[in-house]
Length: 258
Image (cartoon, rainbow, N blue to C red; front, side, top):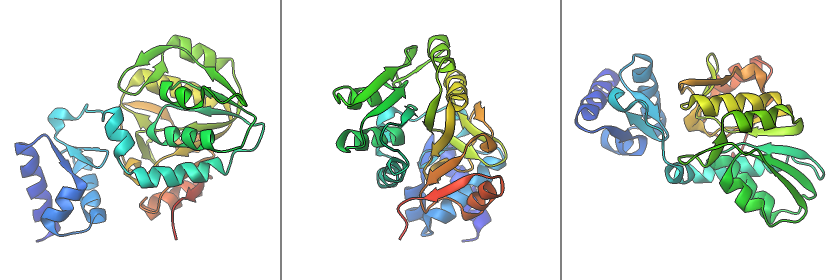
């Protein structure tokens, strides 16, 4: 089957069901997941669908945001590897900021089990705070703010005002989309605004993004890629995008490779 025929079939499938998954399409068409992701990227660029974590949705459901459980389960091995690479950047005595996200949650769990203390940790995420709440050698600061139930993140003016008054050594930032030209994005504009304050609060900004985030663009702009210092990702990330990040002065760490 030619690529054009395969892409037409994908559109036809989305006319019958609101969402498709990369793994299912890979099995159906007997091609690699890399090939399917490229198909979905091209179809999204043509305005024919919207890519999501691990798949795509029809334009009718383009505002879809995965649930917290879906985010935690998606690409779990990659997220754990990214978190392991991230913890290696943290030194005893650091002041760090952990954004709300499934990969930053994995980092919090590693910090819970690790002896890299004392630390000061700022977070806007309830689940991250819960992981670290009972570690006496971690000084935990919550931003407060309006709780988004879908992400367990605190956003809005209270969170933003807290972040404006802080300056940390390292910000570990989550994102729904990472496009080299368009920057980092997320579906919720209030979450985007809070993340903007996080970027400004850090001496160093480190983005934790598995391969599924690359090439995706959501409604709310967080920042251009030139506003971050490092991106930690996995071997599935597009090589050309990683090279373009490096050209823009962003250090790239690929976690979990052999």
